[in-house]
Structure formats: C-alpha cells, structure tokens
Image (cartoon, rainbow, N blue to C red; front, side, top):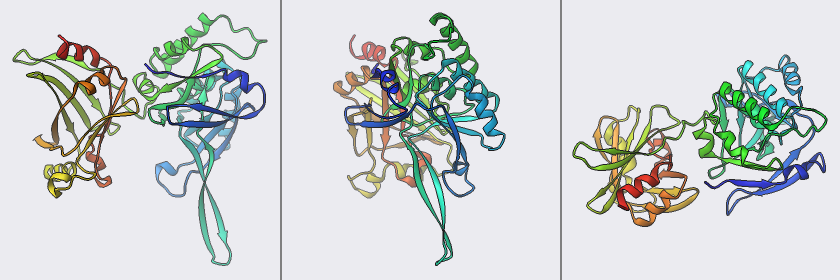
Length: 392
C-alpha cells in the first residue's frame, strides 16, 4: 500500500499564521497549500445561481479548530442556514475536532472536502441594465488534516473529491498541540477515537493508518482507503475479490462493484482458459434505453468502422495506465446487462496483483454516461487469485 507522507507539518505551521506549503501527491503533481493557523471562522458561500441542489449555499469553515469551535458554529448557524459545511483546516485541538464532529452530526449537516471552493459574484451593469455573474475561487486545493478529520466524518453525508486517487484528508497519531492541557495518554485518546468513529459509521481500521504516522507528520489518505473504510459516503465501498468454483469444478476469481449510481454494477470474472488468462466484464444498468442503443454507445468503433477514440477500455492501476484494449465488442446477455471479454497478459496480471486500485475507463460519449461501465475496482484479494489460477 502506497501512503503519501508530508513530514513535519507542525514545525512549519507554528512559524506563521498563513503560509504556503508544497507537497507531491504523485510523480507528476505538485500542489501548493495556504495553511491558515488562525482560529476557525465561518462564512456562507453561494457556489452558483440557480435552484439546482449543487447551487445551494454552504458553510465554509476555514482555520484551526479549538475546543469551543462547535459553539461558534452553533451561533453562526442561528443566523445563517445551510445543511452542508465544507472544511479547510490544518487541524488543532483533537477533542475540539470530535466536539465539532458531534455537533455537525447532531445538526444533521453534510460535510465536504472539494478540489476547490468557489463562489458566484453578481454585479450590475447600469449602462446595459443587466446583471452579470462571475465564478471566483475562494480556496484552491483545501485540506482537512489532524483534528479536522474528526470534524469531517461527523457529516451525515460526506463528499470527498480526489486527485488521481489521492485525497487531501490527512491523519496522524493522537496528540494535542495544547501542552498545558492534560488529556490523558494516547491509549485513552485512541479509545475515544474508536468510539467516535463507531458512532459516525466509519470503520475503525482507518486509525491503523494514523497509528503508523508520527504526530509531526501527516498521511494523506488514498481514495480507496476512504471508500473502503466508509469515510467517503458519496462513493460505495470497494469490494474485495473472491475465489469461486463453478459447477464444473473450474476455479475463477470474481468481484462485484456498485457504482455511485446505486442502480449500476460492474462485475469482473477472471479465469485460466487453457493457459490463457481471460477477463470478462459484465455491466448491469437501470437505464430505460434499448439494448441496441446501449451496445451502439459502447461499440461505436464497430458500427462506424472507426479505430479512433471509441470502443476502448483503459486499465489504470494506482494512477498508472497499464493496458489499453481497442476494438472491443460488447454483447447483450440478458436484459439491462452487457459484457465483453479480454485476454490479459502476464505483465498486466502482475501489476494488478501488486496494486491497490484498478480504474476501468471506458470511452463512452457524454450523452451515454448513464450506461458507462467505468468504475474503480479494488485489487484487494486479487493476488491470491493470481497465485491460485496462474502460478500453481
């Protein structure tokens, strides 16, 4: 498992109230963050104009969490209504973070950590007598680390965007930067943390990642961890591969992954077909489209006899493209289900066996996103299948 560590964040944070910090999240991405050490403040952000749900105003919480931050939020919400709070914070008081998370849950608020926070600004042109709207960035690449993690998981629904498989939600070992306050030892704090996560519906195992991260470092969580441990409720949890035996005694590996669209499922089955690794992808959808229309959307290259940009699937493991399959032919097997089969090379098998996440990217036109089989697949458990099928 590849964990990205940003070292000694506290030593930087203590130097000034607002600083610029850089961090690599992958081999090609360098991000810069403005970290605000001032106490957390709240403001209402209107991201756009309109009546759609994504245009609804939200609370932007920006700054360091203190023990009584939840009281400040309560006072703010008495004069400003919103059902969602989005965070940008380097952390602060760990119990303050839990208090804030408890309050967020009791107030039935959703939480979010997006790639950027934007707001719509309206201006009036007197000469043309028209209103114009401009979208401006309030905070680019916000972070939520340390005590902020516990505030974030307090959300009833939690939306967490990621950068090529990495999020900007960070955790570390328990400690409190307030040296004058006795909170007991790390064991007590860990117990409190476990109970808090239980209450918030987050799996305890996420704290195992924190336990291996020194208090002066930050581990930014990969997206597959946030899905696996139910930190991100906007995406269904990733499912582990399993070994199965068919009626005729053949061994095969299988995984079934639900999409963000709760009515769509991508299933993968891998077998050793006379020494040839064969992977079959099944996609089940709930759209009312006719099966022939769905097949045309997936087999555009076959129907148009074009080899450019259509009818392809790309396999990406942990952010790196490992294989591309062109000129695929999908077929309909039953109502609202299509499938296609691929021959997998030893190189691709090996990379899958040693990876964390397989991102299946199908080239489907935007108009057919409701029948797009693209999704993330966990590779947990795949190695045992690889060894059982191809290394015995």
